[in-house]
Length: 90
Image 1 (cartoon, rainbow, N blue to C red):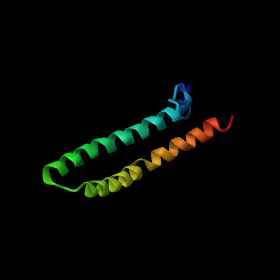
Image 2: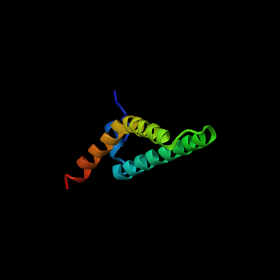
Image 3: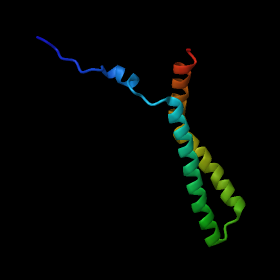
Image 4: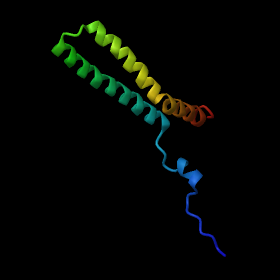
């Protein structure tokens, strides 16, 4: 019986034309900034509409910053590990 294997093997697909982890990390960090900016715009609009003080918006943004950091932590760490593995070995 002949077994036909697909090429590349599943484990090898990660290495075939995979995006540079540095670029992906840059994209992730830019997305993080974009999300924070969008949320800040919405919070500022709400503050203007309802007379919420700026310091309260700032305090809420600190919480949002922590939440977004928690959200992306694992992906960010994985990408940093890929960068170390791929580029520091040289």
